[in-house]
Length: 570
Image 1 (cartoon, one colour):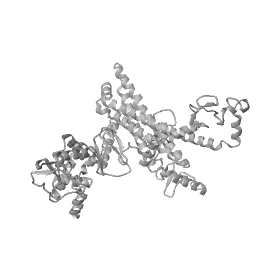
Image 2 (spheres, helix red, strand yellow):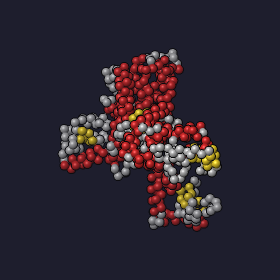
Image 3 (cartoon, rainbow, N blue to C red):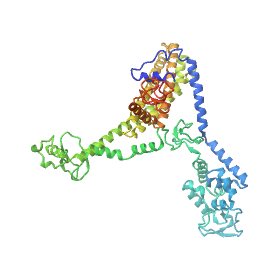
């Protein structure tokens, strides 16, 4: 991560690049391309494969059928009965096995499975228990319990249950005192093809929705499911549809912010609380009808809307009839100024000022949160355009195979990911208590550095690359290969630096910037004690050999001479 220092130092001046950083000695183009593209992507894929697995419809159906067949074989029961058992125990094969062999009779009673079915009487005519019509026995059907009903009543009963949704998967006999389950075979025989198709779909989806280890991808229109293996601090999942989401809460991936903070932030964005804050900060209640009124003209003479039509002074809220030259005229109010000095309006003004400050603070974070989302969506659109057409054009322009241009797509993928992280840092910052000054200052510094670094990468991938596409429009001016080779090294280095910085930032924020308070307290202790007067024993060294960075105050191991967060030389 030798180039991290260059990225951070550049943020203090104009956008400049160190010649040594992008020289041939620093990084050969083929080596950068191969190492960054192949080794890094393979390591990322291997990490993802260890944490979760993406399942398609065929995979889900195959697993479902295998589980049903396994239980059917082990317990020596029909597949329909095995399916009923698995649905009851949330498709947990191990639990079905344990419960069944622990107490088979209790399980059968709870699930509604009989050892031997009761046959319908062989009478020539039977009476339906629902419509009370007497019909031939051939028109009657019954579950394993033997309670017989006519086919039309069964069809209506099953069809109505299926219309109610997935609850139909636990369908039992219509007899109120009977809890015998109705199996799939009977539903397939009696229900209409449309109803049966819905039932099969509910059964298929229940394998995911009832399973604690599998969840649907929440992206609109996506039919993939995700099986999660390893629970750690990183719950982010990338589906095959390119949608990132959090496994824990199924919201959009939101590292470094925890799920609880995301929930509070999203509720706040959609709640009416900020509307009320705006009303309180920018309006006053009519003295007569109490409706909030916004002042949209320069004069202090206010008139409430019909049917109230009360005329009053904006400043003192007194009736306008009592105002005139003796109160200061139309653009001022001596009565208000006098009352304010006496403290009459202190409470209401203080409440209004607090609401205004609260609203301004919220809007500061919300606007930047939303702005980064807009930038992320634009970057995602640019990435797709790059993948579908622009890479081919560039390959033709510089006369290199598309496989050698993969580093450009990697850069755009990194931009999209970093925009997402940067977006959620604003939600993180909003909930940092104002009293935690040191933590807040460090957070704002790290966030600013991250934003500056990301902007450099984004500009390099967007504007500087555009010059080569402009040459595509004017093929007579073909760029020199050496120029593009230098650009390759530069973009690869910026991508790697930005990636490393954001990974460090995410880890630091997920740890709550705990080293800030530690280093701050130790620094103050060392100052009081008058110790640590040279670099060999720097100010702020803690009992566990840590020193605070002069630039960002991050607590670093004493064995390191460079800040692990901002890469500033200690």
